[in-house]
Length: 246
Ligand SMILES: *Cc1c(COP(=O)(O)O)cnc(C)c1O
Figure 1: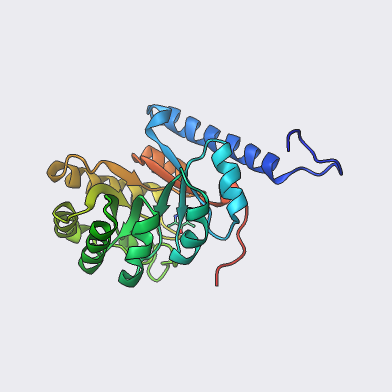
Figure 2: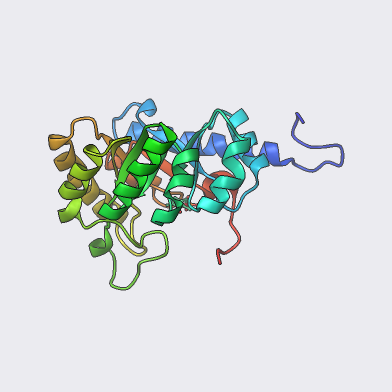
């Protein structure tokens, strides 16, 4: 449907998403300008969890072709019916779901332990593909004690990044892409993401190709871009409020 309203005078979902995409692109543009970075140095990943396939397709038609899910179940429900997109997996991953995630996603942002590396590698070899892996780094020490949410829980301690990176870099079927983090609730996101940036530059001194920094969500994308994020993961800013997750 085109135009601002449907026949009954309602704003359509497509118009709503078009407006949201424009606002998000403007936020990214302004943040990049403020940080003296080119706008195309940041990739927008739409996190479509809890929203229907139709929204994924609408966003794709609006040019948002990097799409992420945080649960294997939802990835499985949407990705096969939305081919041609780059699918990112951003949630906590159990080893027994590695095969399914590897089959459907090109990028896994949440590699946080050695045992998962083995499972992902085995799956990638079996699927005959190469999966780009980001190491999820815990920034828990930058937030108030006990404030970790479901999203920021997990992640490898910064001191354990070199070992995990070595394992990914040496694993068949996996490609070490960089780092990912969620700023803990109640933290100063600039401080948390500055720490992530430091982890990233240490990583790059050993693994030159691992330059991605996946950081920044609806509430803190400006701080993330100031601190070097190459990928921002946006849900609510694009799609609206989610029902509370069970
Ligand atoms: C849900 C989610 C996001 C998006 O969060 P918003 O605040 O809705 O932008 C980003 N990253 C991860 C890991 C998520 O689970």
